[in-house]
Length: 262
Image (cartoon, rainbow, N blue to C red; front, top):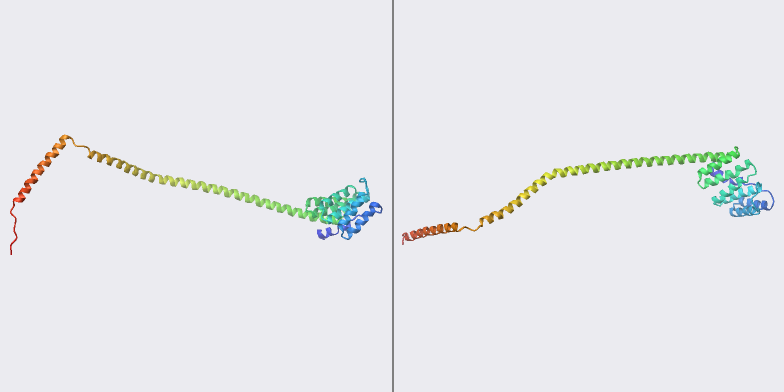
């Protein structure tokens, strides 16, 4: 038997409500519930409960109305309202074994609402009230397995996340080490390139210094002559001119060779 099958027989947990004013509403609610008219059933049970001026200490009819109201609300999808009704029924159970019915129904309601831990607790309560409740036992074992699988899945996801975090941390450390190695390589390359840069800088400074010295030398060459130097140069020029004149005169006095007149 699957849990879905067990949930489908919730109607078997309807409490038979005795005759009377509240009881009459209860019976009307039972008829509507069996016909699948869940809103009408819930209304009838609430009408029966409203006939009580206050909640009695122990009352089998009040207990039955609350339990069956919970069933109607559950089938109509109002899980919160159903849980409240089942809790009220548990509080007003006329004897201990009667608690197994609303406890079992509360477990089914919690399971449908995906509250597995709460469902497990209600099934346990139903078994404590009636150890012979086989439906409650089956559902208890089923939900226990569901919870164990869920916990295993969560543990697996936690382990995977922790492993991923360790891998990310190791990757960060590797990246930092690579950055440090790259920085050292860059510093070493810079140190290796510095001697060449210094040599080029030295050559450039020498060229600039030579360029500064050349104008000074040129300036030294253009320094004005003293009077004594000028007179010596003038005298030398006059002597050269006189020698040149003599040479020219010699050239003009030479006979010219005349070509034959053919």
